[in-house]
Length: 639
Image 1 (cartoon, rainbow, N blue to C red):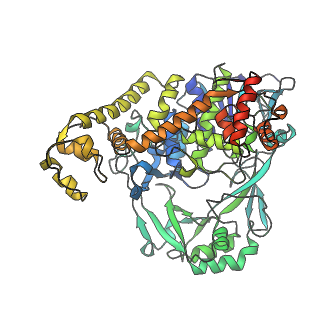
Image 2: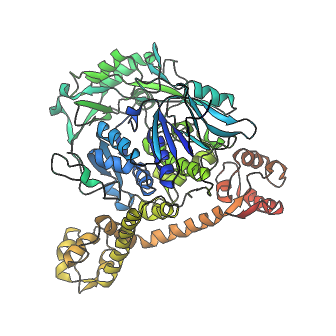
Image 3: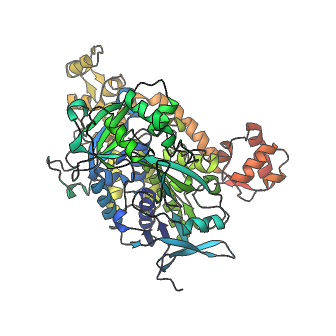
């Protein structure tokens, strides 16, 4: 059958991974099609309508720095914002936005369709078109009988591959998420191609009608929107004006806090055998760090109560997301649980929670570009790789999309190092170490969390996007202004003195001692609790500088010694990453390596010595011998 359209890249699935992959390809100049079973669900937030959090907020900003759309859509849809970790200092602050689900989805689709090289197609991909001789992908065919050709395909199927929904032990429904059918044909073909396939599960809580809630019994949590944006570009912000006159975000709404206490615990314990996860209907593993209410009660029996957040779904609905009550109990039991929560005694459940099982492919089958090792031109991103979370999916989508586009255009691939980004940590962890439970990012996974922060994502990754040609001239100018503001902030702090009378109020509020005489701002800013921005205001300088640039400059001043030590370690890792290993090295013949190291290296086939060093079972002595063996086989080069 002739192809309806010949493209450079095809992206299958239009969630957080798929939309980022498609936009990345388009920004590179590739012709790309984004294929999804329903165009109306492009950018759908299937679970919690929130973006960001600890580590996750940094990833969202890294995706944004690479030209992605998650940050832009979030700013257009934010209805409640919190900066997490405020008590721990700005170096580890973590932005998190609660979004209007409908606004977010529409913003994503609008941002996707702004790219002229990107077309959207409604259809369900049934199979990959493959050259059996070279084992290279040639395109896809949909269930509707439409064929599209491409030299690279990115699959971002989320939970749709043979997805199965569970509500209690008796109710099992085929579905990729509630209301959407699963993808069966493509899953069966991938298994026939010899890829290792396993199953994970995840879940979602019930939703309730906010009009049935007694808010007088709840704790109110208001937004801290201030002047924060996930996105660095200000071109589009005038597109929307909130009801409060805010040109940056919609009108802000509160969240509400309550608790699941002893009565909830009793109901779960009495009905545990009816849970799909505990009654034997599901055997696969779920995300440890996003547990169901059943997991909380069973695994933490001594905890008296568990916090629940009631989060608004949007301005156009009274529906609330019951964060903290994820469950696979029968619908009737879920209603009993809800009504045992203070403030929800008369709650009306609009949708029951459920668990979902789905196929994933252990990511050690991928190389560091997220390309399948055994099938040229095929890339995986998102939950198909055994991860959980919107931000983790978006980060993978950006990398898979960039590399699919680069491959299609005949250009060198991109691999981000662990020292450069959380996205680099994410991808390296997946392809080097694999997963034994749904993978979620934490700051503890990064060796460089002081220098890889949410505030400096643009400085770290925008130069890469610019070098790849992913930004317009106007965008390059905006990036340049933001980065030059940071340099100028430090220069002003070094060159300007603050007099005692100008600093007295600031120092007194922070509990610090007064200045004996005029002192350079840079010296005063090193004190804990002292804001560089406040010092600039007191001395009437730097009014034209961006708030975020001044914040980054403040961190660089305060923690210069810590940052320098971490950057030295990062440079050592980068040099190890420069030592490239031939992917065809015969590890089985390297008798100077331990048997375990040979097995692990043969399975993973690392691209660099740095990647090899992080493979479990490869010792420091193995690494030393590997360098010698690789040199002997002329398989080691500078990357």
